[in-house]
Image (cartoon, rainbow, N blue to C red; front, side):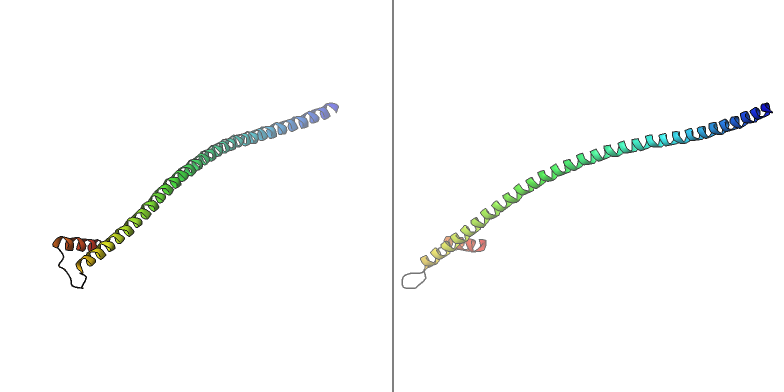
Length: 134
């Protein structure tokens, strides 16, 4: 009987060992799948880090380009304002000069007693041209 009990115990232990081996093989396969997923996840995170670094570099370049454009546009706007001011002064000066010439021409044609003298053809042409410019 002891031999029978020993044989049964050996068979039970053998069965448990076979079950343990099967479970260990299944567990090993699942762990390999997890390791493969872990490697893929690591590669994905590295790719994401690289994309983030490229995006940050692009943002820095865009910011520098925007600052350069802003400075360039600011200079152009300032130049345009100066040109506008200068043109305004020139127009005002030209209007003053035209008014003075018109008054001088009118005063020259009027005599002391109020009669009008005939203006020369050259003076009339100049006055007309100045009036047309205004």
